[in-house]
Length: 190
Image 1 (spheres, rainbow, N blue to C red):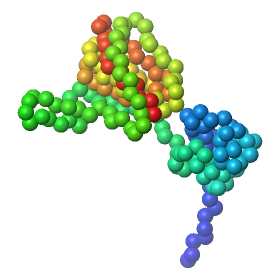
Image 2 (cartoon, one colour; image 1 turned 90 degrees about the vertical axis):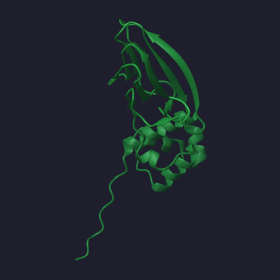
Image 3 (cartoon, helix red, strand yellow; image 1 turned 135 degrees about the vertical axis):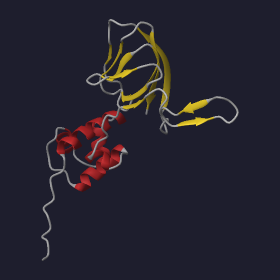
Image 4 (tube, one colour; image 1 turned 45 degrees about the horizontal axis):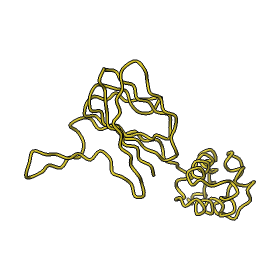
């Protein structure tokens, strides 16, 4: 018996709306600029960014081209990613000439810029950071003390030698638990 073709489901309008706003902001473009590049009406783009409308495949492809993003990023946007490496863990390479080991904590993506900071904190007050520019990622390696670090709604407890990576375009925190806590923070701008 031949199976009848299934009716396609509707596109994920909220995911598309969120992705369009995020990617337009990331590109630093106005509604008018993106609409013009995609050759669609500004009102159509405005409706899509508000989660309304019924976009065609052609409209979505044109927007992806205008924003220089892969189509999948509209339908399945990247999720915040937190990556923890505990002291003594991670991919390490050893030297043949000395007692020396290098552990990769995070590779820099093409076209990114990294700023490196030494941060010191004492117990008593949490450092809460508002979201940075879209696409910013932070890497923290705790050097001394103990702290809760990462996304504001789910920070990770770090001990000396532990590392965490999190999207810094979301609210994030650094809360020292022990006196003399300090860390190396790398801010990655894509």
